[in-house]
Amino acid sequence: MSSQFFNKHIGRRSIVLGGAAAAVAPAWMGVARAQNTPIKIGFPVPLTGAFSAEAQDQVKAAELAVKEFNEKGGFNGRKAELLVRDDKLNPGEAATRTLELIEKDKVDFVVGSLSAATQLSINAVCRDRKIIFNSISQSDAINEAKDWSMYTFHEALNPHLTAGAVARYAFPKFGKKLVYLTADYAYGHEMVRGFQRAGQAMGTQMLADIRFPLGTSDFSAFLPRIQSLKPDILVMCNFGRDQLNAIKQATDFGLKATTKIISPVLLFTARVAGGADVFDGVVGGTSYYWGMEDKVPAAKAFNDKFRKAYGGAVPSDYGALGYAGVRSVLQAVVDAKSTESMKVSIALRQLRYNWYKGDQFYRKCDHQSVQSVIIVESKSKGMKDKNDVFNVVHIENADEKNLRTCDELGHKVST
Image 1 (cartoon, rainbow, N blue to C red):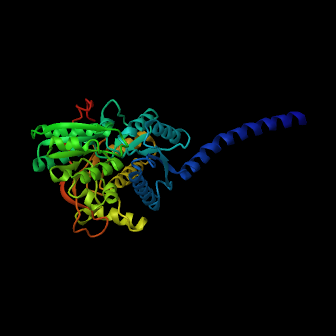
Image 2: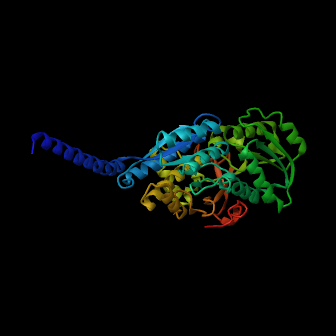
């Protein structure tokens, strides 16, 4: 056998063996890489704009959930990572940032959105790419069959539930003649619908639904008309800076002398920014108030962790949603023993949890988190400190009967 043949033969065997080794190595190395790859959670929220204060709280609480998960060892040694992006309160920007998170940053899941104006665009991007999206913003539409998928979850309250709870508390106490001051986008529209549906059985009368653009700062043109209508209740269906400005100007105008002001969502951040006199006596709903800690052990535990992490600060209502939205997804990863979207979705559908406010679960037909609604009244006297801003006047317990039915949402078969 010639040396030329021998060398050629050995060379071929070396190439074959080398190719086989190369084929094996990526599989082994892939497992190692997977064990070290972080579990990435995209978090698009409006860090700039009218809702920036609430968004910053969402980020802080979401980071707390990630920190807890990592301190417990993560999942099979894999730690979680939060990738925060500014959606600028714009549906197009929200879709663009979400697409980048999925395609460029390779996130495993998306949690976030603070506004009904952005969450449907985020959901559409995630749904089409089979990435779980757990929304932490109020919306009725996201649970409806036309926008929903197995990858769509809704941790936040929805307008039907929130407005209904506030209506059931407030209308029998304060009167039946109503004027709505409504932010002219999905959040405001859906809240009005929720109040009207709940009020039908009580014989309420809508005197006017006055709508204004998102981001309005001057409400003075609306106030004389509201006063002339002589409503029992002025229903503020707005949010963030809009809510703060509207309530301040209504208070300065003197509307409280004849009219009770209520809001479906009474924000902790707006109340702290606006002050006791501006918000005094205003009644509204919330998903969470830190002052529940005296009666709810989970609230005390959550508050203590937040205080420790953030220099004694207390979590806000929307901040708590950021915590729960992220923690639920990470718990589902552990339960599913996987980061694969469908397996995690199935685990989320089965999750029963009590992260901060009491027992919750996701309704199987639409993945809406079934939970309590807290009714609070802003106070100006007897405050223990700057954060002691509300009295909890009622808690409407978690009950699927307070939600729209699965059939009404277009889910013909509940699974």
